[in-house]
Image (tube, rainbow, N blue to C red; front, top):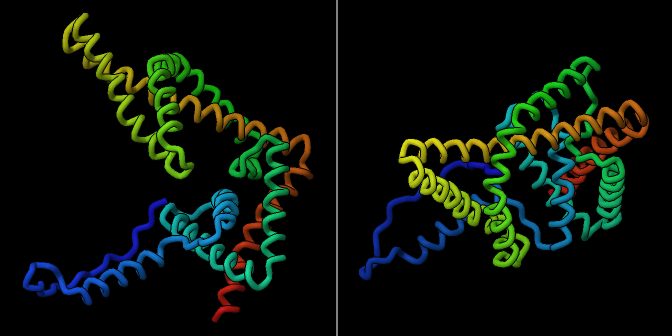
Amino acid sequence: MLHFAEPITVSHTDLEPDGTPRPNEVRELSKQVERSMREVMWHVEQEEALGLIDRAEKIFSAAEVAGVDEEQRLERSLELRQRFVAGYSFYRTHAPRRIDTVEARIARLEAELKLARLDPEDLSLPATAAETIFRLLGQIFLCLLLTPIAVVGVIVHYPAYRLAGYLSRRLGREQDVVSTFKIVSAMLLFPLTWALIGVVGWKIAGWPIALIAVAAVAIAGYAAVRFFEEIDRFYGSFAALALFILKRRFFVRMLAERAAIRDEIITLGEDAGRSQS
């Protein structure tokens, strides 16, 4: 999530004789940057808090109210996380049992979702039976439409995909930089794959065919990504619908518990703010 805050105005300043800015003005600007960043970032000192917030984030994202536009949703999401951080820090010191209760509820919901093989975002009341069936049929049709193109995309890009994963695991030993290495590796290896196909196409049939081949494999790679995304969405929608039909009470209870956890986290942050003020 990217959140753009208000811009910082940097005033003109006279330089020292050696060409450097005045130290007191540098310090003041640094403090201004720090204050501005603190307004749009999380501030967590305990490692255990990071783990809990990461788990709670899925509850936040999945339980957001429908009908809110993207910008408002992201701003609300950031606000909720900041409140949770403030509430966590306060109650871990003053009333740790309250944090333990929230963490236990999150763990219980995670276990129930794992048992049902559902992701938090799959946990939503289905629309009418007809709309749900039509949506599932549409997903099946799209998967069938993408299958032949996706197969080509998987075959062509699989070596680069596996090599990118291997390099990210070897080079990104710290968990928080593995994704960065995956992105960098993919940005290098996938274009190299396309370039190799272009060279082969040029050697065999000339530049026009080479350009068409490069465009075709890139599109096939995108089709492969979309294919697996649609398979995942279809499974989630189908599993949620089956659970709703076969174990409706269990499904509704999980839905209510997710909403209750979200409300409790919001309340936790608000209560902490009032207690500190």
